Amino acid sequence: MTARALPALPRQADFSRDLVGTILSVKRWTELIPSWVVLAMILLTTVAVCATVIIRARSELQASSAQHQHMAAEIGAIREVNAALKQEVSRLQNDPVTIESAARSRLDMVRPNEIVVALETRNSISRVGSLVR
Image 1 (cartoon, rainbow, N blue to C red):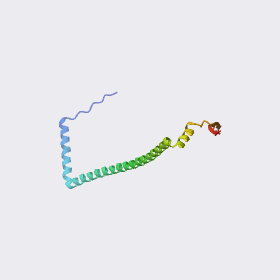
Image 2 (image 1 turned 60 degrees about the vertical axis):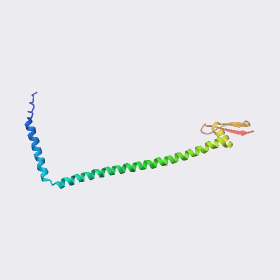
Image 3 (image 1 turned 30 degrees about the horizontal axis):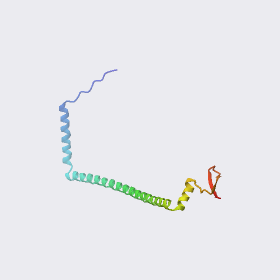
Image 4 (image 1 turned 120 degrees about the vertical axis):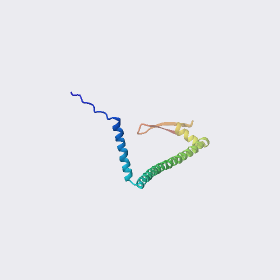
């Protein structure tokens, strides 16, 4: 294996000479380009950035508007369900027929003079029927 020699580092003067050469070449280019072209490029860039910002803001506004409409519809549906539940609670507290119906269906309650008969269905789920004596 042979050892490679490291390249010699340029001196400080070489760096500054390259930098001065670069600055001079930039000055030459700026002298060749009219100032109105530079101004037009700056204005064009500004318009492009503004247009991008406006387009992005509009798309965010549309997304927010759609989300607002979806949430408003969801709130309306929930309010309807809530009103129906309030009405059912009111009936369960005040209407004796509704109270009896709920007790029979939900709690499998029967009157004292009724006979309970267990019925089996095809799905092996037992139903309870009651007969009045």
